[in-house]
Amino acid sequence: MNAQLIDGNAVAARVRAEVKAEVDRLKHEHGLTPGLAVVRVGEDPASKVYVSRKKQVAGEVGIQSWEHHPDEDITQDALLALVQQLNEDAAVHGILVQLPLPRHLDPDVIISAVKPEKDVDGFHPLNAGNLLLGRPTTRACTPHGVMRLLEEIGCEPAGKRAVVVGRSNIVGKPMALMLLQKNATVTLCHSKSDLRREVDGADILVVAVGVAELVKGAWLKPGAVVIDVGMNRTPDGKLVGDVEFAAAAERASFITPVPGGVGPMTIAMLMRNTLDAAVRYGRAPVVT
Ligand code: GUN
Image (spheres, rainbow, N blue to C red):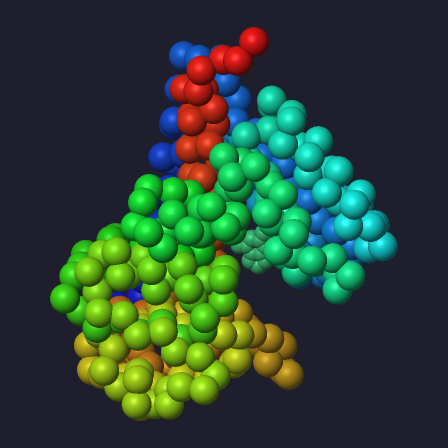
């Protein structure tokens, strides 16, 4: 293997330590404890694992958290009422509605109902729009975490060709915008793209599609920085990314492992976003 591994566990631990230090200070100097409300609808098994990890990490960094766990068959109106209650709760600085939602619920409606100041996912149209406009805003956790990983390895996007594979609202689109804001020349690929041709030119490659080993190592430009957001379970039970790891590691200069690359960064950045939301709340004028 030629590539250096990007140790997401180590960087995430550093982010959590930074957040914890600031949370402690906020508590001692301002008597303010950041609070995160997580809403998990129904019994999606992956969501259960993610949410329990989010609560665990929140506890570790001193953020108070609550899990709301309505039944699978909750109506959209009842879920909106829960979101409204959390919007009005002064102890809650961050609200996260875990996706995916059951099919009868419209995620756009639910996400839009979260107060933008409390939207620690960065999914609300106001926050997503501010990112598009290049304004300061709450940034979606996974691409925010990827930007931090690039910083940590000293990868400066300005002037580089960045190729993002996957155009989801959660990762691909905000990822492309964050790289653009750092002055990369960005290509955003999707299922109709000629992937091999696009990947060939990438100095920075971010793949977030959820298809095991879709991107072949042989397609990479030698020296590319490869960020693999994918997490796929193979039939024999192995966890693999969206990039063919062993072959990619022969050509890349840096590469994220799966697991232990991007995964831990998502939750660390959620803690950062929740802390920032609490700090903004603490600074806001008190309305009586
Ligand atoms: N489901 C998968 N990733 C995410 C995320 O970052 N936030 C939320 N709310 N749901 C998700």
